[in-house]
Length: 428
Image (cartoon, helix red, strand yellow):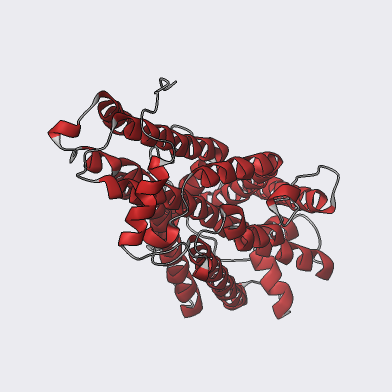
C-alpha cells in the first residue's frame, strides 16, 4: 500500500497547474466526436453485436441500470446457443471416433469445443460485468478527461469502426464459406439433390448419424452462422478491451507530460503515483476478468493458423475454395496481429511515465519521484492471458516463431503420412 503523504501545497494548486497548461495549448474540454465518453457508452456497439451472437446476457442502457439476471430471455438465449455448441461438439466427437480418429475431423471437434467454452466464459463474465463497468467508471471520474488531447480518433469512434469492420468481414467470410461449400459438394457420391449435397458436405457429423431432413439442415446452418460470429467476436472483444485500457493510460500520460522537465514538489509526484496505481489496478482487474477469453482467443487463432497453413499443401480445387481459404487465412492473421498490437499498446503506454520521470531536474528530484519511477519500472500493467504470457510487442515475434515451429512439425507429420488426407467424398 502507498504511504500517506501530507500535501504541503495550497489547496487546489494541482487543478490550477493543469488548467493553466491546457489553456496554454488552447484546447478546451469537448465531447465532440465522441471524446471523453465513458467506456460503457463506447462499448454499446460491441455489446449489441455480442448479444446478437448470444453472448453478453446483460441488460440496461445506462451504467446505473446495468445488470445480469439469471432468469431472463437473454440468459435463456445465451444458454441455448451454448447448448447447441455442446451438441455439435459431441456429434463431431462421435463422428471422429467412428472413422478412426481422422485428423481432418479432429479439427472440427476442437472448433466446437472452443466455441462451447467461449459461450461459458462470456456467461460467467456477464455476471460480473456491471461491477467491472462501474469500477471502470470510478477510475475515469477520478482522472481529468483529456482524451481529446491524446487521441486523434475517440475511443467511441474507434470501437464503432472496429465493430463495423469485423462484422462486414465476418459476413464476407461466411458468404465465401457457403459458396465454397456449394461448389465442393458437387463431388458428393450418390447424391443428386444439390441442396442435400451442400448440407451433407457441410455437416457430415450430423447426417452421417441421422437421416437428412430440411429442418435439421436449417438448424445446423443457423448454428454454424452463430459459431462464425462467436469466434470472430472473441478477437474483437480482446481488441476492444485493449483499446479502452490503452486510452485510459494514455490520458494519464498526457496529463503527466505537462510536468516534463519541471521542478515539481514531492506532493505532486505522490499524487501522480497514486493515480498511476489506480490506472494499473484497472488494467489488472480487466486482465483478470477476461483472462480465459484472452487465452482462448490466442490459442484458437494460433492453432487454426497452423491448420490453415498445413492445408495449403493440399489440393485447392475448386477455385471458389481457394478464394475462401486465402481470405479466411489472411483475415485470421489480421485479427491475431490486431490483438497483439492493440494489447501491446497497453504495456507500451504504461511504461511511458518513466521517460518523464527521468527528465526531472536534479534540484527537483525527491523520494516520491524515485518511488514513482521504481513503481513504473517494476510494473507489469498489460494483458497476461491468465499469467501464461504477456501481450507486449516482443510477444508478436514470439508468436510468429511458434507458428513457424509448429508448422514445420505438422508438415513433417503430413509427409510421413501421420496426418490423414481429406476424404475423396466430401459428404463422408
